[in-house]
Length: 546
Image (cartoon, rainbow, N blue to C red; front, side, top):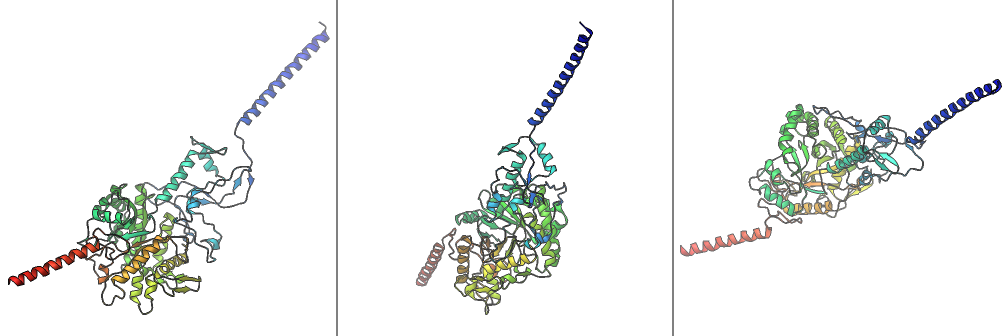
């Protein structure tokens, strides 16, 4: 072999080695490209229109049960305690399928806790004046998952297993379960089924036992009751009845519960927890008609007591099924006429504002005891009786809202809505916790008779069963508890206080409003007539013998 040939061979071998090296490098490059292609493609998302998107951030309650949930300004009233709202830029991948309307959006206008106010009067939703868009209660709980996630949420999602696939997108199983859990909480926590309920007072020594009362209520198809304590015999008697109950934590317990969360936990463990789930305890009314009452010291302890009861339920994992509330009397208002002028008393506001703020966080409605009977009785010369009884009358015209009212009950409810609006809680629902009409009263208690009581309660029941709203809130069905189930012969005060019952002590109806009593009233009358005849006959016989 020539030297030149050897040089050429050596040169050729070097070139071959360089080619092999290039091929090897190209092979590695292709493998790297292939590996990258096999990884999930990161899509560059186009920026869509900016809008507010709710991002769920888990909130925790410490082991002592202290409330650590984020609080929002009271003028926006619709802060949910389980979420924090962040404004993020909505990004949507072109070609993806738009998500369907959430369940919460469907429920929003159908007896939800925090419906948007009706805009038929040209008024914008709460917060519109300040440019704040309020999310619905369902959206705040994460029912809608539109919008981009934060890096934090992405890292959490990557660490979870058992994901689901929806339209080619990976949806974490935890996200699916959380949405369903939040939906169930939203549906269950409501303390009122339908629109009609009754207050079951027991300040009497001649009314039927609780077992008979449960039978009476089921026969009357009454599904909601309120009691003013947490009597164990009553709660046991209603086990398995399907009747939903709000129990009461009396005013006498407020001071102790307000200073000690442990006392609140003890009360719940003793009076609520043992009866679940058989007895449908749906709410705890903390105090009754406290604000505006004569004991100003109770005003100061009401909010701490309410918070401690809620936190006690939270510690016992019951806050998702039992509502915490506190009913008020008309004494909290400075004015209620016309309805649009409704406003709270200045003396009450320092205590009412924080209470409403807390209730707006946990989704509690505003409970009001509204009695057209008391209004009429206080001023019969200037109030049309027919207006108070749902009968035909000229009605009242509210010049500010340009709305017409044909009954006082609706006007009282709308006055409550107006008062709530003035302090920044226009989305809060109003529920009437007491209303009724006395069938008997003292001489100075105008209108207290059987005829008026029958007319009011019969027409009220018809009105509630229609599931209609008020002139100012036409899309939100009015709900009310009638006072009371029985005449209570041991109640103190004027005669009317002992004669609000729909039923007599023996279980027969006091008057006909559409219910059937345990003993038909006609049969009771016949028995009374027979006794009278026997007495007369016996008396005649005795006279003859004499």
